[in-house]
Length: 392
Image 1 (cartoon, rainbow, N blue to C red):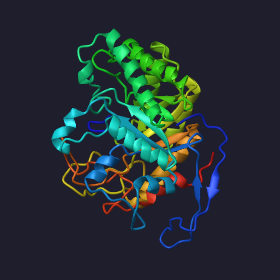
Image 2 (image 1 turned 90 degrees about the vertical axis):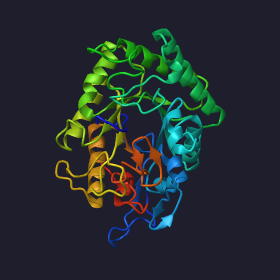
Image 3 (image 1 turned 30 degrees about the vertical axis):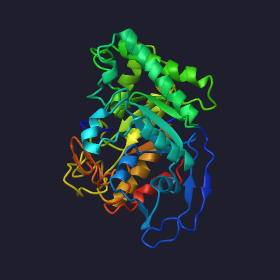
Image 4 (image 1 turned 30 degrees about the horizontal axis):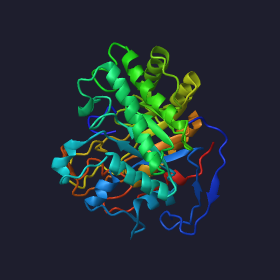
């Protein structure tokens, strides 16, 4: 996910759910306490990508639950989150003018995030962008250190980089349970060498194979064998992408087809289509399916001068743009994923509230109307979509 977006779930099996009623469970407008349902990540992922979290807190972010300031990892965990997704950039030196010299989403920042996630009792999905900056369907820029490399050198670089990252995390007991070989690689990765042009997936497939081999080789000596995710933006692109990767490029040794699903960029016209698309993908390609990125606005208002990526001015398929409608949308989407045979959902940057954080597009947040915290940093009703009792 990120700027200029075109804008993701495992084989459903009978799920053993732990239902724990809490005396402190959220009340809805003074109504009776509602029990929460907690899911194991390896049965159904209730995830959150909070890659910005360390940078946001360094810029003054405070997160609250019922008005009480708490560690955001603990807040998420207490509301049912069982996995944290975190992106990794190779060497994001472009950040320096905006961060007073600090670097975020590099390996040191990722170590901090994974440490916090595991300390809070959550699994981790490590999202390798294979770039120094944002990778998405419109941008897949080769890291500066790999520029002008031949295909042979690039394949070697992908293999050794992926292996070295995992080995380094292993020395700190921070091996992720899942790992993405690329982020929203609709049109390939490491452009132009690995770009998909005229439906030619060959070079892209070779790069994917290098990353996959590194994970499988690492797993031979690891107590945690990360599940491998390949990632495409938008459900309506997923069949074409999976066919290209699997049938044209011959890349079959991966575990999860991960998908971004945002209503602003989707080709789906209704919520009810989600389960159909997921069912068809799962049946056709025999892969687990997971929505690894999604979000929905709770307001069309802004809290800063940074233009929001999703304005919230256009409701989707009968869903309004209010805190309760955000909650309803997320509950319905999660049930659709489950009904279709998917086994996970990850909310993208529910923590990106307005702060003094800067980047080369603005100051504050371009996502504060799509977070799971309101403009005062308090949890919104939709935070509880992760602990609802769904029908499997």
